[in-house]
Length: 272
Image 1 (cartoon, rainbow, N blue to C red):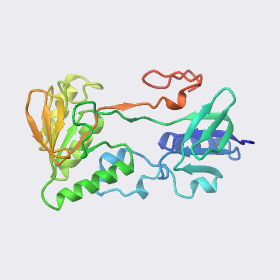
Image 2 (image 1 turned 180 degrees about the vertical axis):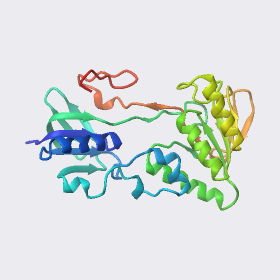
Image 3 (image 1 turned 90 degrees about the horizontal axis):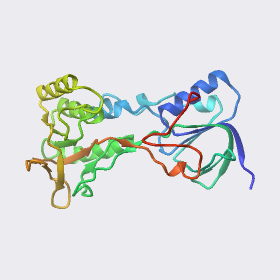
Image 4 (image 1 turned 180 degrees about the horizontal axis):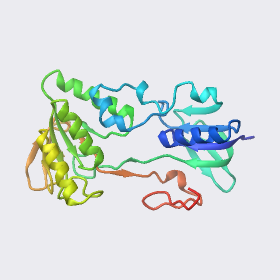
């Protein structure tokens, strides 16, 4: 079976892929480009997901990485709702999830990462959310609306990194009850020192967030759904829903059988 050939193959429909396509078109206005994104949505910027998109100050249109007609006007073939299921880097080939096979001259892997799984008892209960995509945010907003029709939502966030603290700040601004849970001594422990971490903790507490530092989640509990989180010291945090923000992990399935090396991330050299 013949394979359609592209000069450039961009794998991953996020802002990095969009920036790459934009740069390619500045340097090469005519080279064929296939841009493949697994999400059904057109490429968009993710930072507002933890802030303006949740509180309603930013809509989907404002989050678009590039204008809607940008791709067609520049003859970039954008495939949303598809993924690259297999790579053959030795033969410069790729298989798509719809069964199509393509070849390329140059490929960029910009697949990003996925939320790390919370690995404690009860993590399989309904009512535990993560946040990486617009669809994740919409599911979270729907759950909040369901609770809000009855009472002020009580939200428990597990993980006090960037995403967890941003969510805590957003939900406190929305006048929700927020508990932020983390086993480290202070927020941002993986990316900042104690002075910055304690400043973030103080800032959140002054906004009404209940910060549980050095006291991680031991298990999730509830009658058919998450209703409480049991902390390492035995304290109980009641909640209407919980959000896991415990880091990210790269997907390795696409790299199997290729020469692409990966540890905690895909390894690159001076060319990337």
